[in-house]
Image (cartoon, rainbow, N blue to C red; front, top):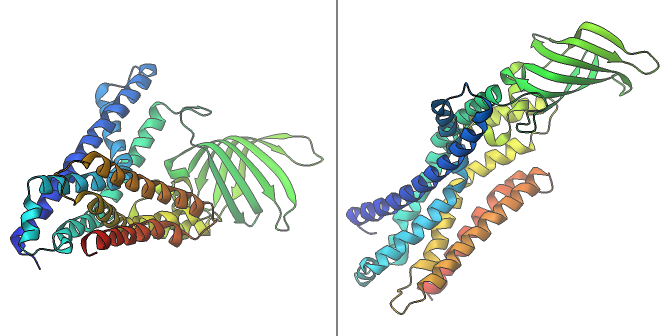
Length: 361
């Protein structure tokens, strides 16, 4: 084992570079989002630059979370190339330190970043993103707006039978709906009637639909001031239905999965998101191993650009593969467990195999 001093030195070098890259991308995203929201605020003169900046700073962390694997990949490659260029790794090798020993600090640091990102960063960014979406809805979103789609589909079973509810806009965690249409079916699955209403509000055990129009087969449509629809939905179940998996905090995903299932909706997306987050630490370790396999050679005779571009391509291929498998998992074609863990496992094994071949023959 290498000494504590060298371990701390390598880990800190690795973390500093990753933080610098992540901060640079974060700032770039902030500028892009800020300019876009500032342009849109031209239609809302009451919105100031401070409000736009607040919305942006609450939105960017959730988006920046998706580029964390690339920050680790580029940070690892930059760190290893710099250490090699300054002959620090060459000296370490000459002192008898193997590639696995000086990779250990970076691997452990990447794993720690992954754990912190899913236990602390993800919950905070998800809550901030939800608040940002709410502010954007209040400022820019209107029913039928093409800019901001807040449509919601719900399915419920109650004493009245099966009801399929669609709303163009939701608020208050799904407890208040606008532009509502409801298709009602009997317990035997026979269509009973369709109800269209301007708005709907959830009360304990009942939906109250305002200014409703009821249409039933063989009958003339009739207007109803208030239409009461029995429901077994609760605010917790509605929150699960209207919050997308990517916007759900890590610690809430298991309960959201159960709530979505109880609401009669497909919980596959929440299961996939939970497994994807659990696999993130291993995915970051895979990025470090791939970076090491392309950036540990001594570039005295050139070829650094060609070699490093190979590492970048390998990282992008791994990332694209994870997205493809995620789409397949979300569509139910493969299990969420396989979709989430396969890229991390395959990337780790390929990186380890490449290092074994180049370092240990």
